[in-house]
Amino acid sequence: MKYSKQAFYNGNPDFYELPNSQEQAFILSYAKNATKNTKDNLMKSYVDKTGQYARITTFMKDIGTEEMARVEHKLQSKIDELFPKDRYTVTLTGKALVFQKGTSYLIDNLIISLIFAILVIAALMAYLFRSVKMVMASVITNVLPLCITSGLMGYFEIPLKPSTILVFSIAFGISVDNAIQFMAKYRHDLIKNNGLVNKSVISSIRETGISTFYTSVVLIFGFAIFTLSSFVGTIALGGLISCTLLFAMFANLLVLPSLVLTFEKKKALKELEGKAK
View 1 (cartoon, one colour):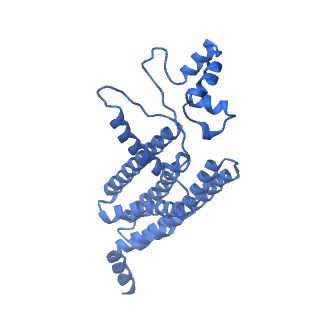
View 2 (cartoon, rainbow, N blue to C red):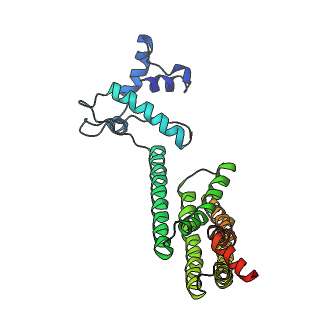
């Protein structure tokens, strides 16, 4: 009836209200001429055929995922107050809510998967070296590029969404592969060189450094091609993965060997003293 009155006054929003007794004579005369099909189609927008389920539709602006969660909490509190759960079953839905729930689900799964991957890597390094220091070196090297990328996302105000969440999983997997190659080669050379740390680190970086560099460069430029896309999500995905792989390459070539030498400092100093004598 409110819409009918507003339409009667040429759509003026000031007249969006129930018609008074004088206006009813004019407005109801138009309503009586409405066909049955029109009435049915109108009712289908709000009530199902059984008359047991009603739909309340509203619109809101794009306010972001965090603000959407707060609005949902306030709305749910009001719904519980107006529609007691023992009498009504209320379900919230809509594109914005589904997107917010999906993003939250992906973020939670990203955190769980990264923690699981870190624990697996730590267990593998602990099995290879039986050393807490080597575990710390491998974990720090692989987590550092992800921290730098997340910092860049915050600085440039790049939001976490399905297209950007994938960055961490993809980049972490590639970075771990290079780190494991170096650590496995280092363990092999350490046994071969009778525990000489400096010599083992140098031979390992010579053996795996070139392959790490070339594969990283190929992957960086391969993902950088995505930045030529016209879709914003694809651009962000390609650019962030390329940056993360660049940081991961330097981490595996510089940070990881440096951490190994730092954690094995005592052995390395003994080797230098032995050579000096």
